[in-house]
Length: 280
Ligand code: FE
Ligand code: FE
Ligand code: ZN
Image (cartoon, rainbow, N blue to C red; front, side):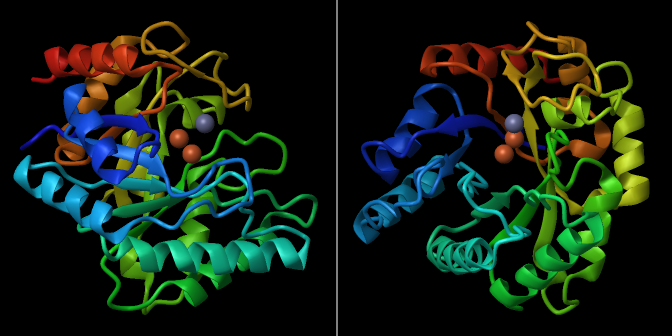
C-alpha cells in the first residue's frame, strides 16, 4: 500500500505551483485553503487552466487526495442566521469547484454552537450537509475531530457519529471524518499513550470506513487541555512513537496523512522524511 504523506500548503502562486511545492518536499499529497482562512473575501476565483495543470501534475506523479480545508470563518451551527447562510452558500460553491479536481476531498470544522447546545448544533450541521451535498458528487466531505475549544462541536467521536447519522441518507456515503491527532489529544483521547485504543474507539463509535484522512500534529498542551495549539512532531506531548504507530497501523493503510505543524517548507520536508523513515 502506498504511503500518502504531505502537508498544508499555501495557494500563493497558484494551484500548479502548489502541487510542485508538494513534490519538492517529498510529498505525494497536500492540503490547502480554497480561500483566505480568516477573511471573508473570496479572493480571485481559480484559473481553470491552472487547476487542470495541477490535475495533470497529480496524475503524472501518482499523487493522491488533495484535501481542501474550509476557512475558519465558516460556522454551520452559528446562532446567527446570516452566518449560517453565508457558510452554506460558500461551502456549496467550494464543493462545486472541487468537482474539477479529481480525487479531491473537503474538510471542515463542524463549528461552534455558541450556547445553543450540542443538540441544536448537530441539527444545523446535518441539515446543512443535506442541502449542500448531492448524491453523485465525487468529492468526499470530511468532518474534522475538534479540540473542544469553547463551544466547538466534534470534541468527541459520539458528536460526529450523531451528525453523520442525522444527515440525509442519500448523501451520507460521501461523508467521512478527518482525525486530527492534536485535536483528539486536546479533547482527552489517549492518542499519545495508546494510539491503537483510540483507533479502536473510533471504529466502535463511528466506523473505520468513515476515516478518510489524518492530520498528524503534535500538541503544545497536555491531554484534555482543549486548547488546539499544534506543535512540530516530537516536540510536544505526543511522542513520535505514537505517530509511527499510526502511520503503520493496519487499519490506516492507504489513508492520506497531512502535517499541519508550525513549519516552513524546509521543516515540512524534514518531517515528511522522518515519517518515511519510520514507515515500515
Ligand atoms: Fe482544521
Ligand atoms: Fe487539523
Ligand atoms: Zn488545529
